[in-house]
Length: 91
View 1 (cartoon, rainbow, N blue to C red):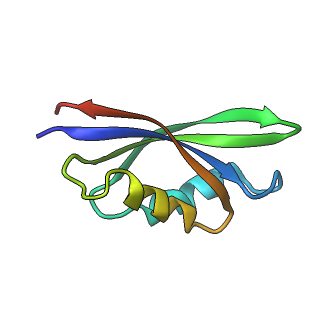
View 2 (cartoon, rainbow, N blue to C red):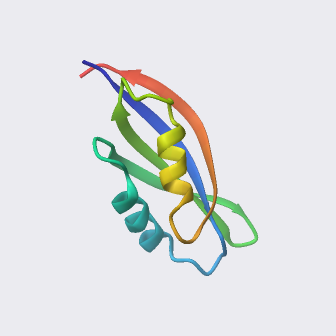
View 3 (cartoon, rainbow, N blue to C red):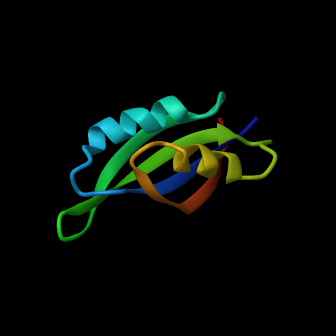
């Protein structure tokens, strides 16, 4: 069975938010069966950085990436969530 790799850009509410702490909160908020495989920091402008998350999710998820987007948006400190790429990855 394959998994889905979703690349998501998460923008913090403010430049004062520590991105490593925000990443930890995001990781804890992921629904069961979802797994954070990596992340990197993307500079945006004027000191604002975004976190690009690489998340594996089950292939047969009803609603596509919507449950993931809702879970990420509900994390305190998250301003915006943008799905950049979705790939099907065989195990």
